Length: 137
Image (tube, rainbow, N blue to C red; front, top):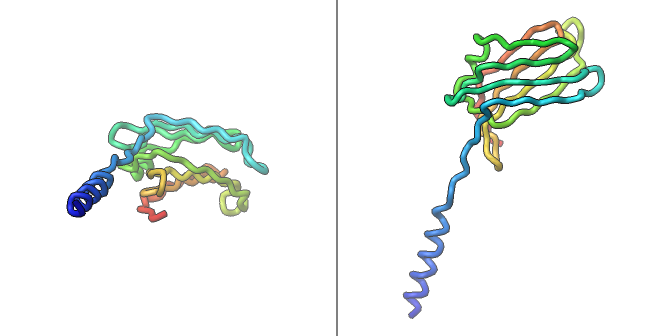
């Protein structure tokens, strides 16, 4: 009888170890709006991503202008499979480009961020796109 109870207990633990897995729901398109802080003004970020996880278009409206991230810079975001975004602002110094918007595109799950890349837009129009980084949050 004890052996039967032990086997039942082992099977119960084994079956609970085979749980469903959380999957990535990557964006196909996205649009974020912020009224801004300080002198940032309104910020609008719009983009699209294909089924392969490549960001195919990214437009940033900030500092009362529209900026399009060039396709040759978007190539660095290949296979990010973005399903999350963070945005931030820095007042900056005119000699270093002025006000700056930071956009972090992320791929992750409810418990951690697996990959991230940073897009930086300076008021002088300079756009930088980082390589994809693996994260251990």
